[in-house]
Image 1 (cartoon, rainbow, N blue to C red):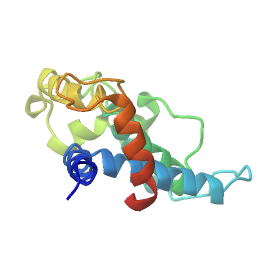
Image 2: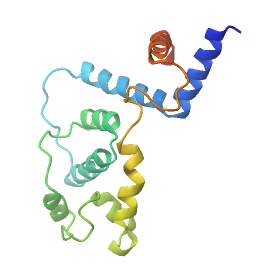
Image 3: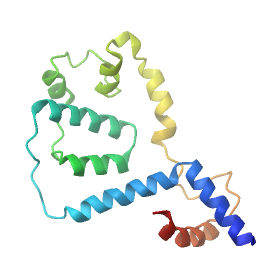
Image 4: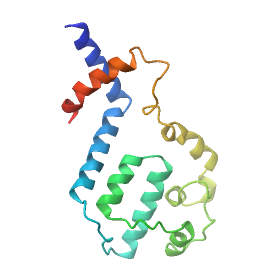
Length: 162
């Protein structure tokens, strides 16, 4: 096996291990949904319960920095571009808007059902690595290859990922 093949395999393995391949696939799916649904659309009518659930999911995806998933979800569910307030969602759920910590999504509070079980400091602290993706930075201290080499290899791999 040549050095190029070894490097290519190592890069593939590294991209999969860090979840980069999954992010690229999600981005491609999001773009595919956008391309297939290019004309301007109005949100489809869904039951009130579904609309509330969709907004809870949107808030959760947005909070955690799952941009590609959010893009696919927003397009696929045809969510309105007008995002309802937390107070509005709380009202629809018949809960007080401040029942759960304000700095985390309502879905966390609802999942644990009691404010005492949700530690906002822990949720916020544990989500930081996800919200500050290293994938989109130009260099990482642990990278063994140059950015130019990686770009050449990734250009060749892009067609093979899907």
